[in-house]
Image 1 (cartoon, each protein chain N blue to C red):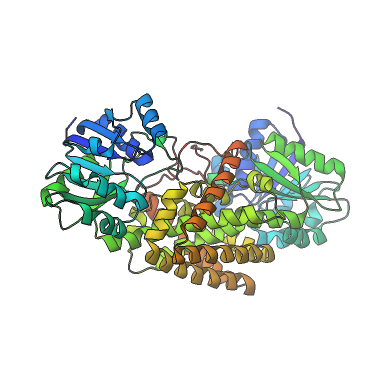
Image 2: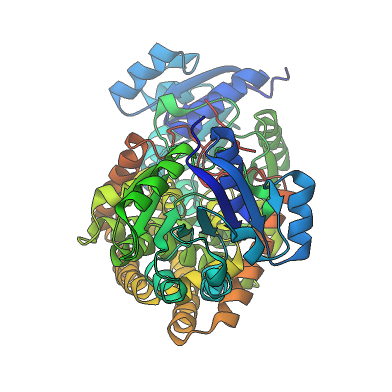
Length: 306
Length: 306
């Protein structure tokens, strides 16, 4: 049990913030953690399940005297929240966020923060398809990566302290610049999500195949897409609108390759297809070796089998 | 323990056939099960791990006196195997297959079979990203669907008996016509697989993002794609080449929808995106209600969390 911050304030109490609270509690990383959510229902739920040591009625109250303030609201709401809390921040405190895009968040938040506040943007690469205060759990960040993007306003000491906090929560931490972060995430997360949403939408539209058939016979492939496409709509709308350029670039590349594979199917070029599918197998092996997934056969079945 | 067939012959000893053997053994569904694989190494492995009661040196030997013959080879090999075994089939026996497309397999196999043989094409909707004789396990088909497509040559009794065999292996069974099967599977499996293969290929190609970054930071979305894109290259090449029309139709629809969403991103139409993402969430709920996946937050992590 190593306390990293005296007081942490969580603004927004969804899946990520609630998991941060439980993971922090497990580690004893904060002396006290306050929380605030805009919706009264969420604040009520938080009080009922013991999420945060204090659930406050205003963001201003929550951040008062906090050494670390975590903005855990949708990316589109970051600017307004930053403006709201700015006058109430403790001098010298650290502000971070957990948004899925970094350039936009930095541009939206940094101008509002008073001098002397250390702004270190952040992004824990962890989540499930569930959302809301009751979906959090204390192991969400274990062995996952959190990427930190220190801004000019941040002292080295502030970044080091935030790193220690995330490590106490179970995460591996790496620093990265904002634009590179947004490109990497467009590849590994944003474009795949849009693609999964699209495929699920197509299935739903297709009148010759009934919804119940799509649901019953979704044994392989499609079921994994539905899991991805069940993620929080507001969060994902904001991601696409605020990481527009990188996402559109990757989707352009994707469409190009998809057309090449479609042509191979149409012309019956089995060699091209086989070579492509063999190459993609290797990446999977790399992910398992990197410890970011298990080798257990799963295919979206959610339980280990042998 | 209800014996359904006196002798079952498995031609091809990969993931599906080996799982059929173990599931059949669990249920006592066959008096004896013979097996054959083209590769000597596979036959050796089968003998070593006790896969099949008899591992034969030729397909002819394996099917001799068998009441049920299961063609469990890649779709592209079905025709040659049917030709090879035809003269050795027991009069009145049932022949089935486990291929992922049905119209092509029926056209490839039916002409070779002698009169009096009952050909009931089949497709168990189950699998993992692993392949080979050692990847099978006896619960693979539990609560999964097996689709049967009886051909004109099949008696009602033969279809009923095959249904009972699959039910003994743990599966739910439904009958469907070949073309509808191929369309449904293009939506729920074939198009999603091609899309996943494509996205993984794009990531691998992108020189500005390193492979190790793709692998390390694949927390959400992309990791599920890599699992799908690790499936057997030969099997999938054959699927796309033999379910060409339905796959290309669905991919055309997919591209159309993807372009509409790209346009919404480009023009900043958040309402369109939010509405689309909200609608796709409902399908996921349907799949969980249908018992085809669990609600446990997973996101490709392969273990239950709370």
